[in-house]
Image 1 (tube, helix red, strand yellow):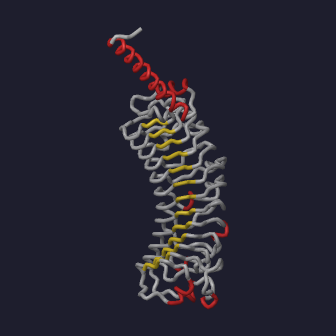
Image 2 (image 1 turned 180 degrees about the vertical axis):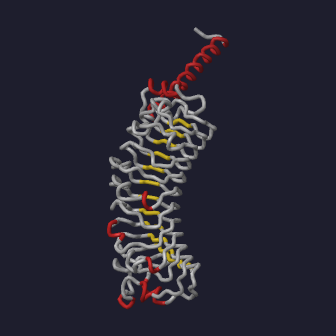
Image 3 (image 1 turned 180 degrees about the horizontal axis):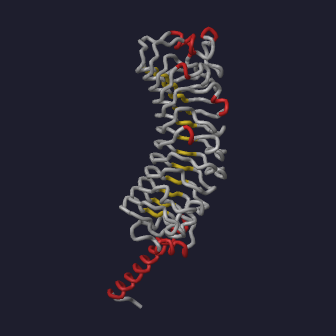
Length: 358
């Protein structure tokens, strides 16, 4: 039987409609399969998306509520893993709004108006999967407590924090990054008691606080220690013996004079990058063999010589580079009272040196 022109057209339209419906089904199902999310959960998540927020169908575990001028947190869907609430006017971290969001992995609350009093009691501790908590640029006066044991990164920079509650970090064995820069922490707030529990910490940022002494109680796992912009005047003898893994140390913009820096205090094998810019040093401290980058700009250093700073005898440095050769590659000395040229024994000592700024 032959179809008329109209029949062929109707059949073609029917087939096109079927193909379009199939594409729509695939569009809905494919993200679910990619996200390893059951279809029922997917639909419940999309349908529960707050009207103030955006829930991308191809990334159903994420809810974007950033830059919306929100004064409160809307009720969050139950299958949310990534919640973005930064750049709003939120004052309260509400347990009611987050009651169903028990699967959160990532919570960004940067640049809001949340106070310590505005954090509902226990609201964070119930998030048993939360790994990343960002609360930079709020109005917190204390580190929030209690915190979930699942936490890996905690960023609380540029708040008004002057207190770290005793025991707040106990049980946080997964925490490896703690950012407290730009707060109001003084020496009595950063102690062995307040830092107890940071058993696997790798990076701690205490820059731009009100410290006058090197902090006590840092865990021996610390690899990156940032203390720029404080009022530290001296480093105790043997301070870094308790930090055998420290590799990146920043003490820029403090009040360190050479009398407050024991000559061999930095003589530790793990250190790779040492920054002492904008202090009051008059001498170059002893440079450990493994150090690769040294920043000494904008101090009061008048001279430098290989015999004083070379970690080995200049005469003992071999012509060929081997494992025992000093590893310094970058040296910054500008902003001092040193006049070129660089002494020849510096060049002879540090054979790997590629850049000197003077």
